[in-house]
Length: 150
Length: 150
DNA sequence: CATGAAATCGGAAACTC
DNA sequence: GAGTTTCCGATTTCATG
Image (cartoon, rainbow over all chains, first blue to last red; front, side, top):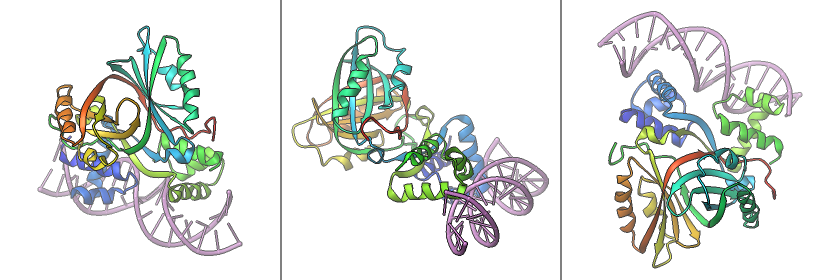
C-alpha cells in the first residue's frame, strides 16, 4: 500500500470506468502494471467492489434522516432486522446516548413516521431521537491519502 | 424511470463491472438496449458516477464517528471548510438539537480529538457532541426499489 | 428495442530489469 | 518482486432498421 496504490484508489473513486491505460498515465506506469496493482488491491479486499452512485431523489428517496435508537437491552444482534428495512441505508452500534444509529432515506417527511413505526417493532427498542437532514453538503468516498497516523 | 431502470440500477449497484450482455439478461433485453437505458440514466443524472468502494480500515481510517456540531450562528455556508478536512466523509445541515452533523473517519480513537480541534477552528462552532461507532452493521447503496410513496 | 460492424478494452501470458 | 510489452477474445459503442 504505497503512494501509487493510493493514487490508483483515488482515481478509481473519481471514475471507475477509466481504462487501465488512463490509470497507468495517472500514476506514470504502463497499463499492464496499473492493472496488476488494481487486481491486487481487489484481491486484498482494499477495493471491495465497483458500484454506481445514484441520486437518491431520482429514485424517490429524497428525504434523509438519522435516527438514534435507545434500547432496554443489548442490540448488537439486530443487523438483519435493520437490513430488512429498505429505508435504512446505514446502521451502526454506537457508544454514547443511544444504542444504535441508523441513516434512513424516504420519499417525504411524512414517511419518516412510518419508518419509525417499523423501528419500534424491533424488540428492545425503547425510544428514538430523529435528526432530519435539511441539506446535504456532501457525501464522498473515504479519503485514501495518508492520514496523520497511518 | 420504470421497473426495468430500477433493476438495471440495482444490478449496477451490486457490480458495476458487469457487461451490458449480462445486464441485458437481467432485464430480459438485448445488450444494446440495456446500454441505451444505462446511458440515459447517466445523462439524466440518476446515475451520478461509477466508483469503487474501499475498505476504510485498509487505508488507515478504521475508526468512525458522528459529530453533532452546535453553533452560535447560521452554518449553511460552511460546506467548503468542512470539505477541506479529509477526515470528514459526510456533512449535513440538520433540524434538531444541533446545526450540523458530520461523519468522520480517522485512524485511531485518539485522532478523533485532533479532528474535533479542527472543527472548533471553524468560526461559529460553539460545541460538539460526538457519537463513536463501535461496530458498523452495514453501509449500503440507496434502495432503488419502489418505496411506499413513489 | 434489436442487429451488426469497427474501435477499444480486459486479462494473462512471456520477457526484462 | 515489480514493471513492460504483446497478444487475442470479449466488450463497448455507434450506426441502421
